[in-house]
Image (cartoon, rainbow, N blue to C red; front, top):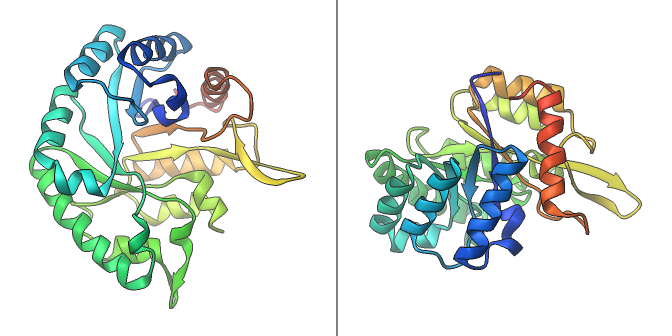
Length: 255
């Protein structure tokens, strides 16, 4: 799997990203753990030029970012300039705003994402959509997520499937990855463990997901970036959780 790379989804470390000094310290720790790339998310106020300087200083690649539909609608030119500064060629809408959480809303959202994605593509930036589990609600015989991708051009909107949320929505992550060959350059790798209180987030390889099937599907369909995320570490140091996930992915053959 030498074609692929592992990145940290920085939302995992959001409590350590409040100030520019925090960001610099945290990115240094990320590099020391062994990661070579990040997905920018959860950053407090920090000038984009300062972020670029910190990334360059640590030798970290900005693989992608997460953003909101609102920002893309209101600040697209600034957003593009920022990502060019970072050398960042990917971004993803982190979630669909609540007003679109209905069958008609999905189509409206799809139209907006398609239009914005076309503009970003012209600027050399690939737009993706990051799912949670609510998109697995159905309208007729299709999930909202299927409707979204059926009503957008793959050139304008890619998939950024999240393994945990696909499983939570009742889907098989490996099967869903194989649904979109060539349409998913990035994915969120996130594990799920089942305990007395139900499902919860876990370090990669410490939970119940079928990682051999997931990673095989990702390799076969052309995934390039594997973004490690853990929304909640339940009292464990998030840096330790990210280290465990990285080591386990290496043991699984992902370098």
